[in-house]
Length: 158
Image 1 (cartoon, rainbow, N blue to C red):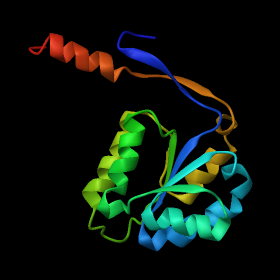
Image 2: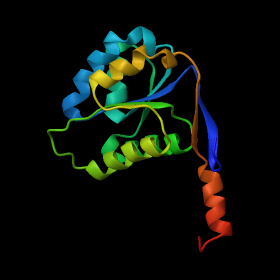
Image 3: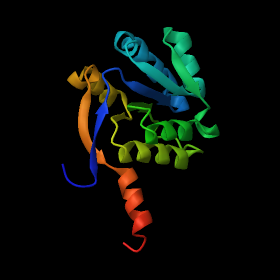
């Protein structure tokens, strides 16, 4: 591929962030219950209460971060930037104002920047789980941000 890009591999065993706004937590729990067999083959993470509720309802192991408004969104965003999170299932509530909306937008943006699969509703999450790439490694070209950063340091005027 072109200069400034590198090959990124999303492994067969995905590291999946599970997140839901308050009004969507039950929908995410129901979705996880319906898809428990697929999800148990992957490593699961979640923000605060969502991680705990999914674990209690399904028996799935979901590694928890802080609550979203208390920094959990940023923790997951950092894992994405470090290449330690492979996809995100985020059941968003588009009809309710969220006090931490800037955090949510930043999290979705970082997922887009690092080109990971993102589902913000059940239909898209369903499509992701039945993709042949769900169980297989997936190679794709992404921006080499380390090289871009190095170029900016060496050529600050460009």
